[in-house]
Length: 167
Image 1: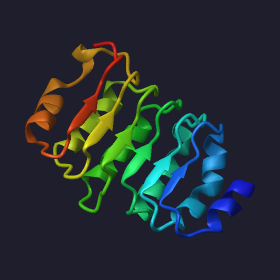
Image 2: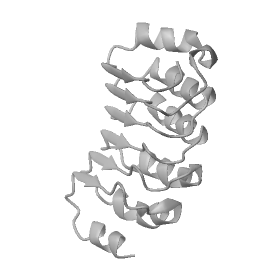
Image 3: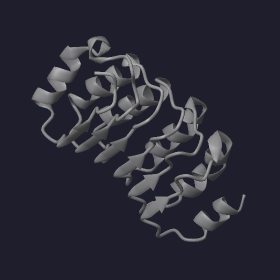
Image 4: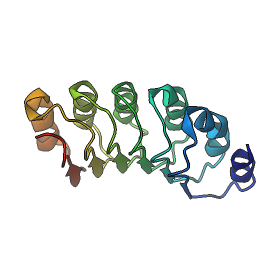
């Protein structure tokens, strides 16, 4: 794939937006190592690329090996709960530098949402969290203690978008 070679040709990329390309899970898997080679990368947008939770190994690898990432855009895909659960494990870790996490317009249930809310209780970096249109389970299915505790204890979160979520 030419995209992998193109990304690999410059190791100083700080912002990489490959949204709206329909690369799919296999395409992301193919370019993951090239993305990881960008040790100065702080912004990664892979929205609207027909990704499902089968891309989880690639996302996990990106989060584990690319500690410089600050903005991660995963919205407008077909991701289910397994991805936010894995992301929540990563944001528990003290080296997490994520400031913005976009999970908008995916196929999440209360399980994935609650996992992220629980992780956010201890997170010290995320300022912007977007779930817009990602879950239709309604507020009654969200574990309010986690949401409440997150909002009371998290001192970095400045923007929480839960619009169009069946509340």
